[in-house]
Structures are given as structure tokens and as C-alpha cells.
Image (cartoon, rainbow, N blue to C red):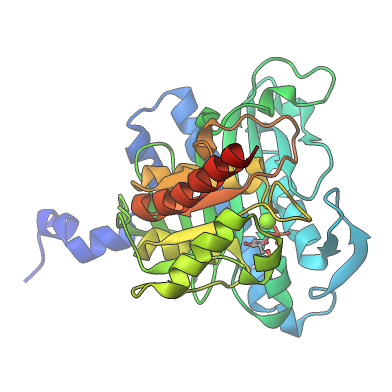
Length: 350
Ligand code: AHM
Ligand code: MG
């Protein structure tokens, strides 16, 4: 018997296989207006960058000139890896002739990359961390890319991109690509968090989970405990509490996207507090913590600097770092309670 076209269309398996990223973004926007089309096109370009980076990573150990360091340092004083440079350039080249974004700002570039010919058409800025957790690349462990889209405000005539120095609520969309056993793209345009898996045979990101809601509590805490001696007493007290109580377990891969993805799906808390060497912590607000905070909050979790909501934090410079506590609401609030107690004791002793 030949299936009717109605039963064909309604097949849940086929429908699942057919929900591509671009179709999903347009459905989410529920509009065919210019801005909706722009955001959808930008997401498609980000997906293309993700596919190119995933392809290179999958063969990295077999190719010349992919692994290892370039011998240079980036604006943060960190050693640059060859994959950092490649991935940074991939994002630039997929957006260069797109007519979509006017500026790209990345962790790897001191100043934004301007595409003046796009400005009359696409007044958006893409902020991104091309390869997050790049120390994992050489040992074939997971890494990620993080992205955020903001509207450009004003003309930015002096090239300082001062309009980017605003809080995280100004983001129009944010997400990450996780290069793991499969390549996943997770995004939000402020209407829930959705995940996609790259089907290599189709070359498409296919919907895996819609409207991810994270648990209000989870057993995992994810932090680099090697920094214990460098933390404030309040964070040390929190970690001692974790050690002394049943029901907690530690997971830390050194690559934020993977660690955060675990927290997003299973609950718990990721933290990178300030240290003696880096009082603001290590993670950058515009390219790392603000986009991830946006996702976590969209999934029903909480994001904090320890003393204020992370999305309320206004940076004073492009490469600003912030302490970050991201995860399930109850678990983030537990860390905050230790920080509050620490501050109270400091005030009492002054
Ligand atoms: P990167 O973007 O230069 O790779 O640095 C960010 C990474 C995060 O992925 C990870 O959470 C953190 O640095 C790990 O830092 P540490 O080794 O200090 O724990
Ligand atoms: Mg990073």
C-alpha cells in the first residue's frame, strides 16, 4: 500500500530527522521580518563554521600543522594554539561576504574585526571564543566554540566598540558548539534552549532536544581544585562542605563548554572563582561567561558572579574577566551563601 502524503508528513521519526537548525530558528522567531531572517542566516553561518572546525578537529592528528602552539601569545598573554588561529579565521571567513555582521569580536583578537561593507546591511556583532578549552585539542579531548550575537548600537566611529560594554541582557542570541563524540550545537534566542546534533551524512544539525530544562539541583560540582590555595576563604569553605557531605561528586575537564554541557543536562554547578593570581577569575565575560549565563538562565538555572547576577554585570573593557558560578539554582545559591558569609565576616573584622 502506498502511504498517503498526510501519514508521511506526520511520521514522528521523519519529522525529527527533518528539523534542521535553520528551520528551527525560523519557527522560533515566528516571523518573516528582516531581523528574523538575519538571525536565522547568522545562525546558519555559525553552524557552517562549526562544521568546518569539526571537520578539521576530526582529522587533526593526521594532518600537518594542526596541533601544537604557534609560538605567539594572544592579547590575554596566553600561548596561542594553531587550532585557535584556524578557528578564529574560519568565523571571519564565513561572515566576511555574508552581508550579515558588521564586526566580529573574539577572545583571540585585541580589537574587533570590522567588515565595513556589511554595515549598511547587517548591523550585528558576533562575539565568540573560537576554540574554548584549547589545551584539550592536542590530546583528542572535547573542546567547544562559544558565540553571542548583539546588535551594534551607534556608529563606532573610533573603532573602540564601546557599545559592547553593556550587560548580558543585550544579547540577542547565544550558544555553543561542542566538539565531542558527536558535534552538538546548543542555542537560545531568548525562547528556551535547544540542542542539535550534526549528522555527518547529511551535513546538517538536526534537532536533538527542544526546551531543555535543567534540574534545580544536581550532584556535580565542577571546578579546578588545583587553585584551592589561591581562593578566598569562602570558596575554600564551600569546597570543604562539598567534601564533607554525601551526594556530591566532582567533574572537571578543563574545557568549559563540555563541563557546562554536563551541568546543563544533568544539573549541578560550574565555578571559576577569582584567584590570587587572577582576582577576576580566568573566564571572559563577553565571549564565555555572558553567553553561557544566558543559556543557563534560559534553561531555568542561575548564573552569578558570586555577588550579583552575571547577566547584570557591565564590563569596562572588551576582554573583561568575571568570576562565574553557573548551574542549577539551588547549587548556585549554595555557593553564593558561602560568599555572603565570607563577606559578612570580613565586614565584622574591619
Ligand atoms: P581558553 O578559552 O583559552 O581555552 O580558556 C578557557 C578554559 C575553559 O574552557 C576552562 O574552563 C578553563 O579555561 C580551564 O582553566 P584552568 O586550566 O585554569 O582550570
Ligand atoms: Mg575560552
